[in-house]
Length: 437
Ligand SMILES: Nc1ncnc2c1ncn2[C@@H]1O[C@H](COP(=O)(O)OP(=O)(O)OP(=O)(O)O)[C@@H](O)[C@H]1O
Image 1 (cartoon, helix red, strand yellow):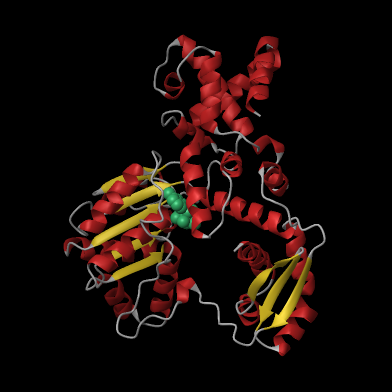
Image 2 (tube, rainbow, N blue to C red; image 1 turned 90 degrees about the horizontal axis):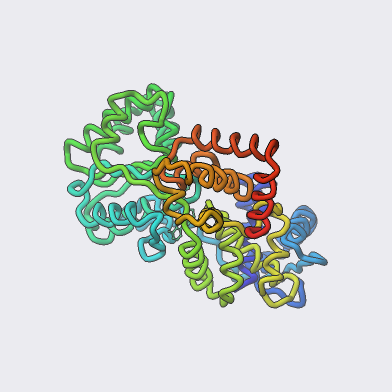
């Protein structure tokens, strides 16, 4: 199974470096066969393809292998005529009688790990899936990049499609909605466009923040929204921020987005990250030790897509170099993508350590209290989270009880100033950092 992880990584690199047409023509039919003594074996469908790939893409494949940490990057091509065409999950041929919504088959409720960071959003999604159009309408899910918003939306889509096969489910990104609208206007097909979106029973719209500033799209979406809402059809929207923070959004749309339930997804804590990695490894048939999983989970704290990428990179690295996957190997595999400041630090751990140092409880630091004894420790904790993790200012604000990013910025500047003028603060920060990294 590990050779497939290696190949997926190589494909990602190749895809970034060639055109879609080239990728589709030459790479989608290649199948990884295995890794023998550090050599990756690949099956291609014809000898013509073998020749072409060897002549035109060998360097690119070697480069990708090198980036994965292969010491002596090598691969071998073999002709295997029966190689099936790789099925593109998003464009799998729909059955003739029922067009399937554009849903990723992997994004189901069964594959979604529930933790304290997403339990509200998950519960709301389940409720909506059980009685679409009746529970919360619209359901508005917001949260940072790669935290599972799309996954949850698709999970509702799958569940509804299974429970209520007669209902029509449509998933669309705001970008696609906008492009389709532009094309419909240009080609004089507006009534077809309207019919398409107003005839669905469950409409899932991803990244709705991108509607900001697009007047015509807002206008059209407003009417789609009203038509569906009035007919008790379910609408689910995802965004990287709550409606009130989407600037240049028409007031009438904003208020509609706020009619139902607004729920957020926060970055997962360490335990949830480990559980996600565990599930991922199991699904791919990989057996990976607890300590390796924990190590990876400590590296990537605020983006689950990156967390999964780190797991696959680690597996690929071990496989290509023919070594057993342990903590040291994982550290080597990830050392190039994570600079030292990001290594090993979990924001929650910073809060715990700082609280412990000042003989406070972690809840005191993330809570709303403004007692003098907690103000400086909280500012120090915010400063360290900024220094030692990749959390953004709004993410830090959220971690510390939903504070505004300007408060976080103020805290960081304050500690910075103190550190420059006060030796005691300097040594405090040094001591805390040593205990954390
Ligand atoms: N709770 C979870 N359990 C299991 N996998 C998860 C979970 N949350 C996210 N993932 C996985 O993380 C990856 C990123 O998730 P997703 O694309 O849904 O994020 P997103 O919030 O929509 O990101 P973006 O802001 O980039 O659109 C996906 O592979 C998804 O399956």
